[in-house]
Length: 445
Image 1 (cartoon, rainbow, N blue to C red):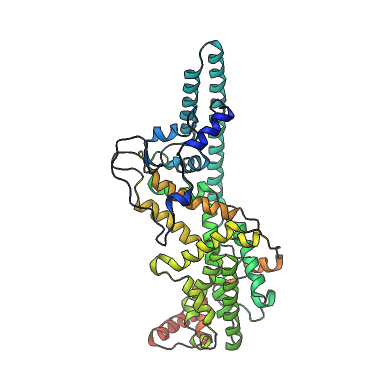
Image 2: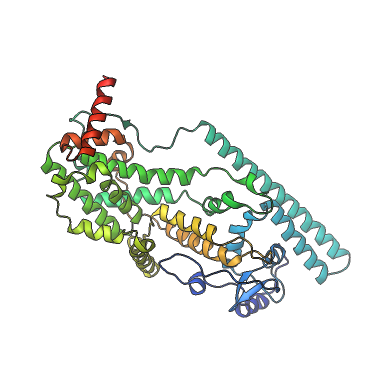
């Protein structure tokens, strides 16, 4: 929007200005997933620390978007500011302010009739862009409202069974008995869902919770269908794993099913698909599955113990974060898409953004925007966007995916019924639960 600078000036600005850092070099990484404490009060606007911008007024930060003869903003700053700007200002208002700065700069550089003519042209362009932006935002909001009004609850599954299905129904092993292939198809589904998540979806976690300036940006915020659908996929996969295990009557076959899913989870880990891996482990840790002691006594649990170690929640999932960091480093130097795959545990990723937002204030005591906080949030979102751009190297198997996405799953009640029928209750609490379930079944009959 500003008048183009000559190539030499642009090159000089990029080389000399310490404006914005590369995310990793500025913020580093740790198991805690948290930024360092906020800076104390400073009177300079904007504030730099070790050459990195850490805070500033909204006006000063907006000015840093526009190039000048001795300054050029890099993509990292532009990405971070635009990502976080909705917390403080509407998009069309931001565009108007940037346009005003551009016109002011042109007026300072040029005089005369020709300059006034060019300023008029710039104003028309900015006005048209503002109208287009408002129309796009309005259309998106209306589309979201219509979808929220008419869509069915997100389930990903064709049927949620209250009771056990017929024993003739096929199971996952009849569709795919190779753990690696199933892990690849799960990864295909994951990448397909991740591709539908955009930066603004993730930033709604911040802007929806605590918009500043009298919450004037709240009207832009709606429920994010894509986040909800992806989170629901995790839950459905966990329940599918539990259903596949609990519905098997014979202990030997049930043991085989448990070991099969352990191998699938292991292959997911090797691929870099941590979300499916965690969903599978969560499914096997559900009470109706975990209580099957006779089954687990026959399972070779060494591999499962390793997987649980990686997903150990202690020290803020430090083991998982170390594995994730290793997968991310592998992805950066990989030559093939198979080695570039990184799919984080999505609910942990969301929680990291949530806690970064809750722990660190949007503004400092002096009223300046705490830009250091948004550096860290945008770094994490930037990593996620990098990972989601990986093209899936595995061919789609429609038969397997159809089963994964449409196979009926048990309700929690049906899981317990199947579990108790396979292995009877062993203590007073389980006996009471089983008695209550049987009474419920009789009343329904």
